[in-house]
Amino acid sequence: MFTKVLIANRGEIAVRVIRACRELGVTSVAVYSELDRDSLHVRLADEAYALGGQTAAESYLNTDAILDAIEQSGADAVHPGYGFFSENADFARAITDRGVTFIGPPPAAIEVMGDKISAREAAERVGVHGVPGSTKILENADEVIAFGNEFGWPVAIKAAYGGGGRGMKVVATAADAQAQLDSAQRESLSYFGRSECYMERYLTQPRHVEVQVLADSHGNYVYLGTRDCSAQRRHQKLIEEAPAAGIPDDIIAQMGEAAVAVAKGCDYVNAGTVEFLYEDGGFYYLEMNTRLQVEHPATELITRVDLVEQQLRVASGEPLPFTQDEVTISGHAIEIRINAEDPSGGAFLPSPGPITKLNPPDGFGTRWDTGYEAGDEISQFYDNLVGKLIVWGKDRPTAIARALRALRELMVEGVATTIPADIAILEHPDFVANRHSTKWVEETLDLSSVQRITAATPDEEGRVRREVDVEVNGKRFSVAMWVPDSEPQTGGGSRSAPRRRSGGAGGSAGGAGSGEVAAPMQGTIVKVNVAVGDTVEAGDAIVVLEAMKMENNVTCEKAGTVTEVRVSEGDSVGGGDIVAVIE
Image (cartoon, rainbow, N blue to C red; front, side):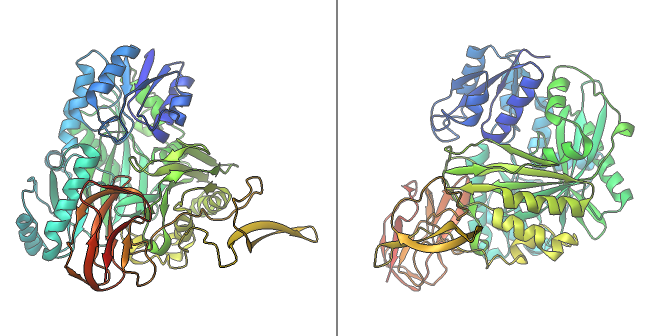
């Protein structure tokens, strides 16, 4: 076993690896950006080294800075977590060339599977087939249009060197091809450091099912059941379940065998996930993620296998301690990602800012994985995952009931979160009956009752509306009251929603019919779509704002002529800043 492991990541996954190291008696080393100087993973690690910079490119994607931290710390192994450099073959090779163990697959396997195009070809060589698509890097939008006209619309554009829904755009018509390709390339470059994209046919009603695989350096391969990740928005997962329910056992077995075949085909070692799309009784290879998945705890709860521990042991040369026949699945697990986003109106707008209160739930079969505590801040420069709530039940209905109970206990204040949307998903008859697909959240789920979270604005008498707890004849009630405008008291146990300025579904923070187009959250302007004198219609995208590695269209609420454009590409803006004026 290693003596010292450096975790080349941040947030929840860094905390997860640090805890596993501590349980095994291994010294943990954290790295951090300027913004993460006092973060939870830094506070928990045995040692910590500064990378400098604020953005991911300046810090967690700065190879030289990380290699320098490895040298300074004397770490004999590096765990990449997920995201950042976790699927970067050049980074893995730079680690191993220094005689340091990369806790993940060999660089050659990352290279094959990290390039989604060569990954499709590798899967097909072992008899595992995907949806119709191109194995060519996209050079222009004309290629997308030609493909769509031949195979049908919509078409999915995907980052060739990434996953997790980042850098993925769906092109509904030929007219959208150029804008969506540009957006996919920008997101891919921002999140993965490379802009190459490819395309494939986009299935309209599939379920997203993935298989967890584990392999050692002695030629042993196992799969640890399935996960259903169909509850998504923007092609990124909200809720994951293990195992995937309602799929015939013979299909599940075929998926597992196909996943192992893909892993064997690229000489894979360590933990990885093979993803499939399931529709109408058939399944199609999607991609292989050559890393630990965000949703790995759901598999841990139904198999009782500590995947991070196995990653460390396999990387140190130990064989797997069990065979495929010894893998057992018990009960049902649900993982809910709690993201700093405002789901009102189904917009899911990023909501960076300080967490003023964080009370996680507890109880039987309840787990909370996070990288934050109250007082920490969710930065616009990084992923917006606050934490993961994972529950286990003896069956799926029990797990759903337990998840709802735990969500209602979870208190997060200071930032808007996806909790209201999570509750709406879990309570919906379609989800309960397992009738949802990857587009269900965006096309079917009604989030109109989720209220917009706005700042408390004083009335003419200087009062603001606040939710407070009161007692009437000894019984406690939570009520809304108009009180003098002052900072709320902190010890009152209020369950009020966080009061942050936020835009609605259109992405504009202006009032109804307002000519002022405002940024709905803090972020960076990556594209300006209009100039002074242009004529626009209500709902037109005025600028594209990047926040938390996601692009958001900021739209106007009225038709008219653009009289002012107050921002340029590359400008940083705050929530509520006016970006343009329409008259």
